[in-house]
Length: 280
Image 1: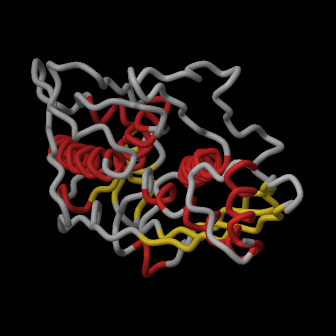
Image 2: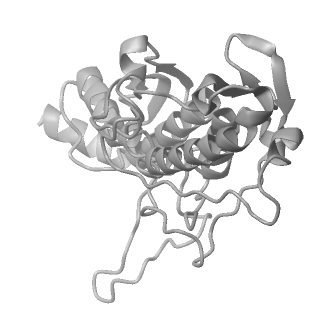
């Protein structure tokens, strides 16, 4: 597919879906992406790429598998619909001893021909992938030093409704990354520009502060994995966990000091100015 992997795990997801659909280990699937000569992929987005790529990959794999079953069925004296692909074998459902290895099944394809199938992504398609509606709950626990204006993150909890999760480790990683980025936005990342020229005055890491490991506190991620959510199919995950973080941190700071800091990031000077206004 002519899709891309921006660090959201597209390569892993597509290989995993293809392998599970074909009954093969991931090591036996060769993935090719990022080439304009291939069928087009969706836009670059962590919320949409996995759903679209998974749906298209699943369809193409199932379409190809049906053709392989047609080629292998006569050798097993059954109808194609009686076959399944499991653990590198094409076998008769209910009779695992009646099987062919994948290599043996492929040898049943007519000489000089090959199986080549495609699959397209359709939103809310009947295969149960790529539905819609993202939701989550995020809670920030902070401590504010009213003498220095320093905001310290103690704990951040994110409970995310993800629908069908293809790869739990990658899904958790998306949320951890979103939280770290969001905390950095809320408390540290401040762009200072020249009002006359618009030039950024702190355009390097010496003066542009990013959150470090000691700045983010304890991060707790919970994926809402339940059968009813699996049935909803794959929904947005990449960007949605990043949306509510500034609000959660801002609300926590407001609860701590009794007044809302109107500036992002909530650096000590902004917190102290806010406290001065409250006292006034």
